[in-house]
Length: 206
Image 1 (tube, rainbow, N blue to C red):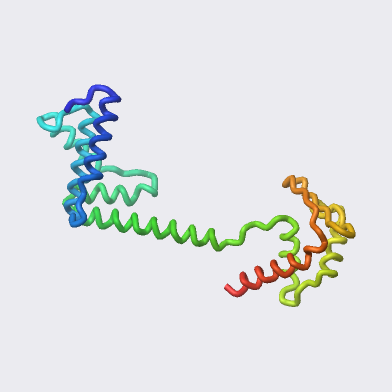
Image 2 (spheres, rainbow, N blue to C red):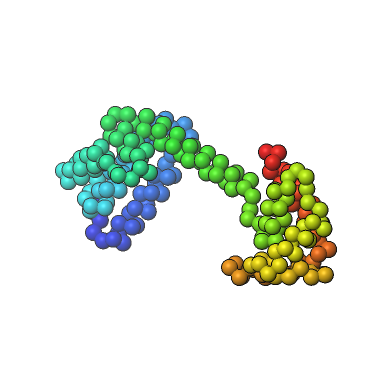
């Protein structure tokens, strides 16, 4: 099949990819997988360059493709494993190439899983008011922080970028840098102190 247009190449490539992905078997050896990959690469390059699968022109293109796979020398460190895979595929180490490829895939999957676990266990940034409680409790750990003492601390912060005013019912907050504006009921401070103290205790016990 000789490819003459980009549209023909796209159609041919789609068919080639589908044939490759659907052609595997559960009992395939690494060597068989390696040969299938090399065959796919050679066929793809023939189609890209518009030459048939057989004949002198196909042999020339195949030789050039193999040479490129053997001599590939990328400056991108992320490509180092793929470079080794290509080198092994074209130097009689087909089974080793697939073993390396599988190991790389497994390692990346494990790294992604560990990163997701780390992110899930990392303390999210607290809203400004809870961050004040968190910081004050940490400073006084493990003695603790009473509600009256915390109110006294907030009164000392009146007029700052976060605490606008400590009123008899609500604490007015304002943070122009983050466009944060909220009134906190004084009646809920004890609950917040208790919740954040438990959070800090859990963090320190890890």
